[in-house]
Image 1 (cartoon, helix red, strand yellow):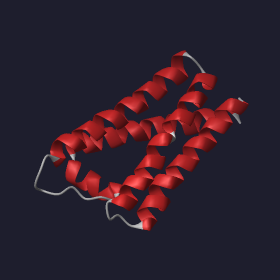
Image 2 (cartoon, one colour):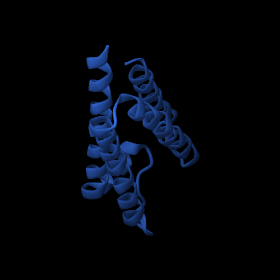
Image 3 (cartoon, one colour):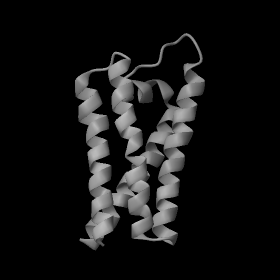
Amino acid sequence: MTVTAYTLAVVLDLFCVFLGYRFLFQPGPAATGYGVPARPEGDAGAYLSIKGVRDGTLGLVGLVLLAFVGARAEAWFMVAVAVVPLCDTLIVLRNGGTRAVAFGIHFATAVIVLVSAGLLFAV
């Protein structure tokens, strides 16, 4: 179970780093994949960059916690971070995104993050 717990945590952290990269360097497609396409007018680019920095930083913090503090700290971090995809679910629903994306991507991600936390607590 230890290998599974650590592997899932690393994969989730690296996925956050990937999402951050994507929002910084491919903001249009990343926003579409998120479930709420960016509108060409306005300051969408700035907000997508902010999301990219947020997601990338969360992934890096998770990797640092796991490497230098341990599984328990990473587990608590995962519990706290689960708020992000839960809020993303609401954001997609409130902004015209589909239920499939809201629940199939964002809510499911929150569940997987909480499962990861549970596995890390069990280690």
